[in-house]
Amino acid sequence: ELCARKVAAATGDMRRALHICSVALDFCEKDVAAAAAVAAAAAEATATGAGGGGGSPTGVVSIQRRAGLNGGAGGVPPGPIPRQMVRISHVARAVSMSFALPVVDTIRALSCHAQLVLCAAVRLFRATKKAETIVATLNDAYTALCGEA
Image (cartoon, rainbow, N blue to C red; front, side, top):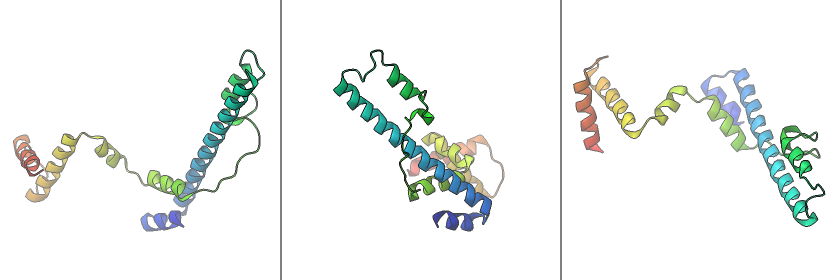
């Protein structure tokens, strides 16, 4: 429902909604695989600690298990796959990833003063209704903005 509402409000494109659901499912699968790997490592550590070496004098079994060489997918030992439903957090991450704009990410990555310069430029352009300015005028707007904060 969250996915449908977000996509309907933004674009209404069913393909995008299905893609978001697919990405949310991938997030869920990664969480399940990570939880299974942690559980397997804990079980292996318990078995190794109790069995005095885990039954392998050279540790080959544990290396194979960690590397996924014994038939498990992604380094997880084979066995029953735990079931988990796709949660709201998975869908929310997929939605935010789908609607993220590279420009916004770039602006967020700027330093504080670089963001202030950008803000001063936007305020200056909106106030003067011009599409260009000189650096000295922008510097004055930046200095005034820094004085406000």
